Image 1 (tube, rainbow, N blue to C red):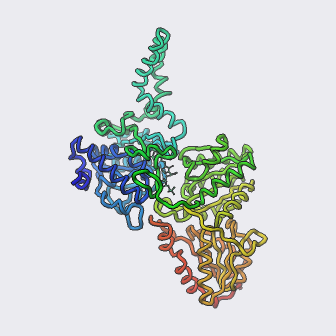
Image 2 (image 1 turned 60 degrees about the vertical axis):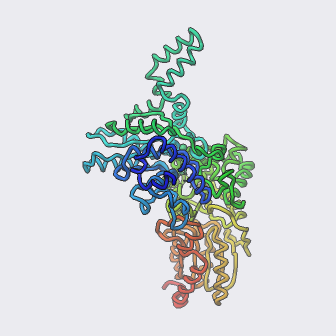
Image 3 (image 1 turned 180 degrees about the vertical axis):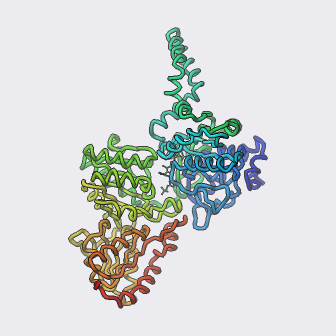
Length: 634
Ligand SMILES: Cc1ncc(C[n+]2csc(CCOP(=O)(O)OP(=O)(O)O)c2C)c(N)n1
Ligand SMILES: CC(=O)[C@@H](O)[C@H](O)COP(=O)(O)O
Ligand SMILES: [Mg+2]
């Protein structure tokens, strides 16, 4: 019988002795390695917060106290301590445990959104609500990583939290989980400050460290140390971010060894008793206790697939990913064009800029988890005569929409956006599906958006995109493996590819990576005596003219797209048809305006009605009505 079997809620952790806690930590790490190596997930981040999460749940009273996790990818230990240890075999699977906090799973879970840098704003709001409602015994604890602290929202929140002059003061504890990494080492001035603390172990210790270092230098060293001590205030503001935090009006406690449970609990109890907002700075190690993760220089097993638990080696068969195709193509483009520069928001390898950065380090910028800054700094780079390629996961572009609209498009700056993980992604769930980009971007004046159907078109359309210099260009593609190339029968003058011909009952407009599926629909319709033409516009926004022309000669247009149908390409085709006075029916086969669950990409697409059979059925059901309607208005 292990201790984990007896952990069903935080009180069960509170009752453990110190040695028992050490045993429990070992059991938790063993469970994480055993289960996550089978399911895939955020192994490294969670191995790094075992003691930290235990200390939080031993020091506070969730769910009466709110325990928040920024991003939430590091909440597996929280789930284990709140009664879900037995569910990890279903992690990130359809109807299984979410990889992020989930209110449907537990009252202990609050933030489901996996977009970084939001937890402090949540905490500020909750703390204000407790205060206004007179709930003065409830704490809000927000765990935020050093990476998420590079996001602008975190500083907007800190600015407000620090302004709290209310009485009684709000009970808000910010736990900085500082492992020095996002995926790779965290970049930026904040990281430098935190690193200074990490290396000198805190301001006071910094001075004694300085004293020893300087006194080794004899009399001059002693003089320098005295001068240093005399500049205590100045040094404190420059060297120790507690100066940064304390100058904001926030109490700073730390740095604390994030793997020393007793020290953590001492700091958290000190924070709990402090009258006002307080920061506890914990130093942790991503991948702690698991040698393969610690040996992984790239990202210390930030997000793993299925791996061999003994070696950490991938146990999945190798395949060509969309990202790898882009990663090679952008280097070839960078070879040809010296004005091309790349920008990533703390995801150099995941978005495929690492090869570009390795060959031309001065031409690739990692701005931290700061998509808004990434987009507007790209407008600046363009204004300065370069052509930036901003590489993000599609879902994270949501955060930089205003900057794209008002800094890039309004000024007609030539910036290219490469959106990886566009469409249904799968295991990361609702806030990770990249399903809104085509809908929100179709309102941007002067924007061109391409959705490549395969590797050949990806290479082609990225090259075409970086040639657009008078406004934003976007290329969006899926997560995971890219299929075989889908060749066209003919390319029309405006770049639209005809993939199949077979009659004028239906014009199937295939957007992006769903081309093979569109051809399967074509084949199944033909087997039922329904003739269709399949086209891939390649550039879907604005809708090419030949799409509208072809639609005018078909009974029904079916637009298949891996994005929300409200405001999607299908909706745009309908608008453009009506503007031409054409009454051709349009069937928008896109995603519903819903938050879609986690699962495999196939499962989620099927549940959204984008499996082949469902689409065939919907087209057949729609046809009779269209056949009975006049093709032209009036
Ligand atoms: C807005 C946004 N951009 C990018 C990401 C992708 N992402 C997930 S976790 C992560 C790194 C987070 O680093 P940190 O906050 O230090 O947490 P750690 O993994 O080190 O525990 C990134 C960039 C995200 N979730 N949200
Ligand atoms: C939490 C986060 O945003 C990323 O780590 C994400 O989970 C990675 O997704 P991929 O597995 O698609 O790279
Ligand atoms: Mg980190």
